[in-house]
Amino acid sequence: MRVTGLGHAGLFIETLGGSVLCDPWVHPAFFGSWFPFPDNRGLDWEKFGKADYLYVSHRHRDHFDPKLLTQVVPTDITVLLPEYPTDDLESDLRSLGYNNILYTKAGEVIERNGLRILVTPMRAPSDGPVGDSSLSLDDGTAVILDQNDAHPLDIDALLGFGKVDAYFTQFSGAIWWPMAYDLTLEEKQHFAQLKREAQTKRAQFYINKIDAPHVFPMAGPPMFLDDDLFPFNGQGKNGESIFTDQVEFLDVLKQSHPETAGHVFLPGTVVDINNGNVTVTNELFSDAEIADMFANKWAYFENQRTTRQAELVAEKASRAPVPADLFEQVKAWWEPLMKRAPILCDGIGALVRFTIGDDDLVADFPKGEVRRYNDEACRYWFTIPADLVATNLRDHEIDWSNSIFLSVRFTAGRIGKFNEYLYTFMKCLSEQRIDYVENWYSEQSDTGEDIRIDDWLVQRRCPHLRADLSKAGTIENGVLTCSLHDWKFDLASGRCLTSQGHEIRASKI
Image (cartoon, rainbow, N blue to C red; front, top):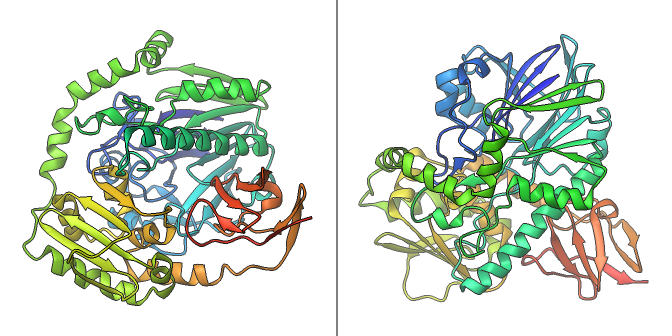
């Protein structure tokens, strides 16, 4: 088996049973904020587009690049479609002309031409959202796991597919916290450090569980080439950003897992795997170029910023003009969804202010209505450029996380903790998604089963996303941490320390 890195989460996998193109991404994403790091435009995309299978793990635009697909991937390719509860990804692919779809089933292995295929979907409201997945392949010469952004809860099911020879996984997740928030620089530096540490710990948790001899960190970090966002590259000009790079992560991995071979994995990195033997070469960048790229990272960013401004200008020109009735459009769109979502509205439980250009509005979730702002006390507030909202209105973009929030082209503030329900609503602006997440939350009832961790008796399932705490839970100084998403709980009080709600049942033995 041969795996070629395409940049970020992109893979081109050549097996004895056919080739698979995974998550190819070239063009700037999230309103021009994200660019692949390093630059992957020099790859032979015509070659990779002639794969036998196309696998898009989820809808986020750093994994799903419609423009690239229409340029290089024929529409008769066989699409490996994850089994998701909503049909958004399938609809997106069909709108591009991809109708040769192979429907995969969660937990079921597909065999074609001697190639074993397992697509493991994630279905929680926060996954993807409402959809993320991993890909396992076995052609008799190697077993690989492309986990990318997915955080599977049932790791035993993945291991049941076969002993993994090479493991490709995310290590530098993306979020807008704390960069976009109304915080002091000192607070941003503190929270960014915590976020980087949590991401690294989560990656190490999966590396422990998968126990593959060779690990290839991928799916991050991006480049920010817009002048306003440029300081957010890497760990930030002032330490206020959250992105660990490949070399920084591998340095940590070398200390924590000396028995594991960790490899720098970039566009053009070629991994040959044959019955346990693994060789790694680089075809796009020389070893000297790679060393310089990381040793002088900011100089690399500066060069990219200088040479790629035309792409930013084109993206900005593609945005929609701001309509005079922007407030009325938002009100007409959101209010029916709020009325369909009593669990979400109750979970938000507050007024949320949105300042959008000249429009200032309030989403009153307890009352299920959108109205003009009138100096009311709001627990959460956002300031968003009007042309971003106008573009989402024009395109009827149902996932504002997969557009505005990941762009980091906004500011936000809050009183109190992170509110999962608020961001879930902003990710699910369609009837199909709203109905799904309402049902999902209503079904997350506690089973009543308890387990022992150290000197505590706690419920087995994490109140956040139902992870098995007997495998993912650790306790220190009376605080339980679920390592899958780094959520924390004070066991003496049962209070969640990460978000509102989500109390845990626990008692000291």
